[in-house]
Amino acid sequence: MSPTPRMTGRPLVPEGYGVEPEGSYLEWASVESRLVEALHYWKATTRPNGSPHVVPRWGVWLDNSFWYDGSPETRHAINLRSNAATTLHLEDGAAATTSMVCHQRPIR
Image (cartoon, rainbow, N blue to C red; front, side, top):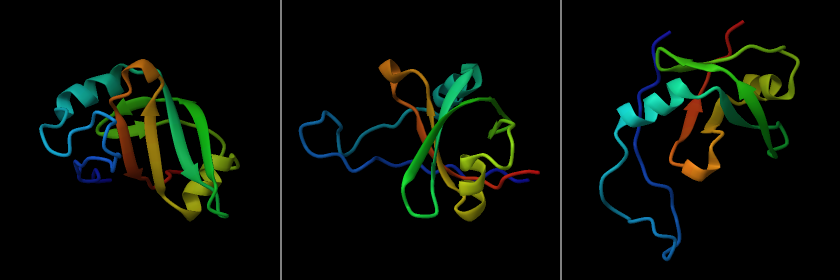
């Protein structure tokens, strides 16, 4: 499976939140080191009715991918089968500098 190309971008944030509209981005190496070191992640998916679903996951970041196990009958696995868009966040909200929007193909 070939990795999804990385794209860099800024979220749309209203003026006054301290996010500059232009400037440098985090280096991928610093983002990836946090992903590799993490033990706990938050994975967000979308239910078929469009509502969000967020679940804490244990996993491992390996070879440019997030790997975890679980039953194919869990809500997030069902969601991913119908809509592969997902967001992965690290557990540490105090250093919330890493957010990834991914398109994932579940592996059986």
